[in-house]
Length: 228
Image 1: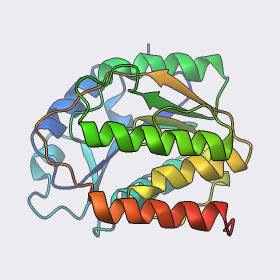
Image 2: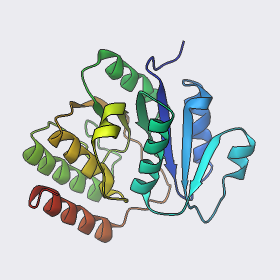
Image 3: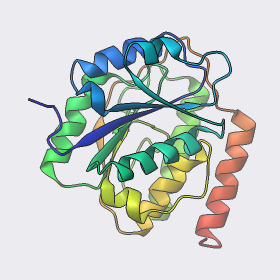
């Protein structure tokens, strides 16, 4: 029996991902139909994922535009192919496929339209700066949206089709995930959390502390001051 009863696409944006992506795909496929797993190659320069394609994985390549742009491309495919839900995971092995049943249970309970994986119950392995910025941004979004979220930087999420249809996104980098939460809350979507494992490995992070922080500040100013 499939883990997810509504038709669900597992969407993974990938930029210069290493061998951990292949391991991740195999672990997901042990729990979810292989044909409902999609990798969006965000214009990688160190690999073309030919090995994954040769192994039968679906990898769609697009010009490099940022994580948010890759996710938005995947959302368009999910809508076009009539998926009911999309689960997003990162390609670096920091999202555990073992946590997929938590999302499946939350989807079955039918209480939420957007479900965020929450790592903040165990932050012992989380880098100090990442922990501090996550706590601050999560606190700020709780104050501004009145939605009780504690890990707004988490990319491990489940999104109902109507979120993808109703929430119009404008950003293309890591700030897209923050924009999605703000606009979904403003649109009256039901947003909740499930606990997930906190995993940090040796993989390179593509988040720029200065550039992406500036994007976040500009986004907050634009959405919550000018409301555009």
